[in-house]
Length: 321
Image (cartoon, rainbow, N blue to C red; front, side):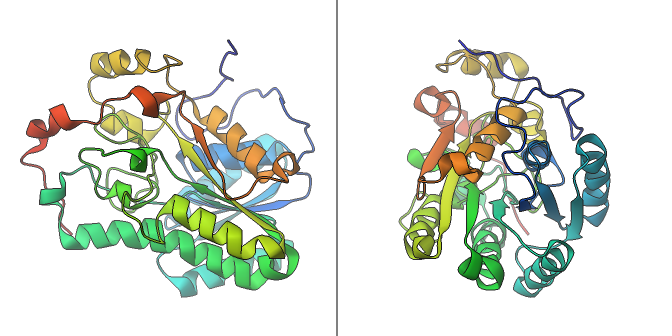
């Protein structure tokens, strides 16, 4: 069985890297990565840059992306533009995309990796909390995709990868908000990457049939924008080590270890593995792949418990904004 590639905890670059793909796979391409200042988004930016790509990393926290950009450029020798942007605000998205195009003259790849969520039973989730997650995850993903389509992709083609999750594949306790769609975090808007259900990490497509579900959106946009040479795919991670979300929501280490070893590959994934999967979808290697959902979770969604037994422990939880 293949061993996982090396990874590091926290938002730091890898001290050494061995290319599994051609080093110039993305040479001189430009990737726009929301949530690129931390967690999985940071590692995606690093792996892209190690394959010749320039990046734009966007976050509401300018200090976070400024620090991340210095690390990324120093480790890879590629250019990294840090931008402050709220995905919920279309004017802010437009301004950020304009700035990126002014800096690089092109954007070839969009990675939608920013989101927020609450760990909370549905009966205690406030209306405003639910709306906040919808605005960040669902509307935010559409906002950035739509702006890039209008400003560049429609006339030049491009690639979009939406970071989603497997939670919508079956009922998941405590994840009504994350099951809305994309990335999960301990507090609304923070850019971390958990895998929910008190031991789950991730973004999830809404369990209900709505256009704004992550994976449904992926398929719709793949169909509509395919004629403009735009590929749109989803990447659904599983429980990933070295992420703030897993540290906060993973539960007791002994309990988590028992559940992880019960999954088919019997281990956690790491951020580099997820970045490699995204690299594949964004690269010419996947030139005939669109409208697909690539699950990268070691088979965990097939075997992980859905958290129902733990519901009584969260009876007093509430999420109000």
